Image (tube, rainbow, N blue to C red; front, side, top):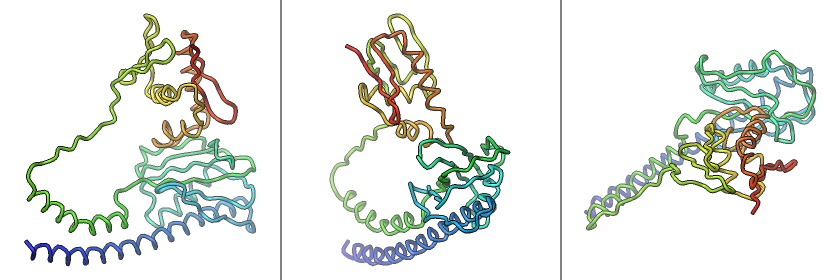
Length: 286
C-alpha cells in the first residue's frame, strides 16, 4: 500500500505540472480572444465613418460572455454588424455558436440581438436591413459553452491522483454512504392571495376556475410568488427567464407581465404592480 501511495504522489506532481501548462495556454487564448473582440469594435467604428475615437477595454461580464464599449456615440447597420462579427470570429474558429446583444448604455434595453448556432437552420436573426440611430451602445457577445476549458481540464487532470487516494480510503473503509441528489422538480402548490398556483402542472385555481399558464408565465409567477410584497428587479427577471436561454426582445417581459396580470385579475386580493425604473411587485392584500 505504501508503494501505491508513493506512486500516486509522484503522479500528482506530474499532473500538477500539466495543469499549470494548460492554465498558461488558457491565459494566452483569453488575451487573443479579447483582441478579436476589440477588432470587432474597431471595424464597426470604421464602417460608421469614425477613425479617431477609441474602443474601450473589453469587459468580461460572465463566463464566456464579453462586453465591447465605445468612447463616443455611434450608429450601425444590423447587417454590417452581423457580417463584421462573423468574419472576425471565423478567423479564430470561434464561430461555432454565439449570441450577440446590443444594449443602450443604461444596460436595460436590448435594441438589437441575434444568435448564431453554427448551423444555418438553427440561426436566429431578426430586424436586419435597419440602421440604428446614433447613440451610446454596448455590444455583448456570449460564446457557446463547448465543454471544459483548458484550465478546467488542468484541474481535472491534477485532481485524478487525489481522487485515486480518496477512492482507496473509501474502499478500505467499512460501509458506504448514500448520496442523495436533489432535483429541480417543484411539486408543491404556492398560495398567492386567494389563488393556488400549481407550478408543476402550470395552472392557477381561484374559486372553481382553473387557468392554464405558459412555460414562461409559470417561471415568471414562480419568482414573483416567492417574493410576495417585495420589488423584484427587472434585470433579475430577464436574466432568469430569458437571457439564460438566448436572445430576448426588450419588450418581452412587459408583454408577459400584462398577460399574467389578466390571468390574476379575478382575485382582487392580488395586484401585480409596475415599479418605475426598478421592476415589479406582487402585492397581496389581507
